[in-house]
Image 1 (cartoon, helix red, strand yellow):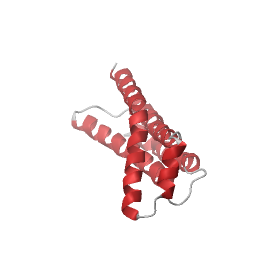
Image 2 (image 1 turned 90 degrees about the vertical axis):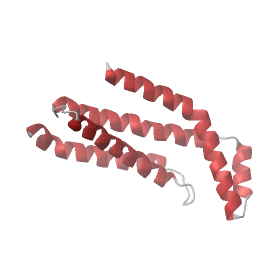
Image 3 (image 1 turned 135 degrees about the horizontal axis):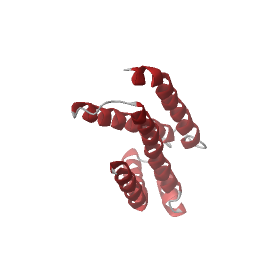
Image 4 (image 1 turned 45 degrees about the vertical axis):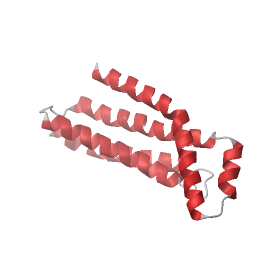
Length: 143
């Protein structure tokens, strides 16, 4: 129990710093309609939920919580938030033609379809790198 109590402040402050970091860098140069703030919040939230899920599964299997496990929390934060940076970069790297098409649309339904297409194209271009980085990290932790 001392492993949990001693590092609680460190873990919470790590998550707060990660929230601030992702909000600052993913929210740079963005308008209110860009949604980058939502992306940074979703990135940190998904990492937090994944961490809680992993610890819940480990607790259910009887794995004891120790100081070594605390390191995994920070590694999970770094790896998980990195995927958000990759996705945002892929969105920024879309061709200028697609950006002009999205900005020239006026109806809400057409804009929603264009946004879905743009996100789909971005995920198609960066999905392989996210899959490979996640798979290699999973393999490294399994060993």
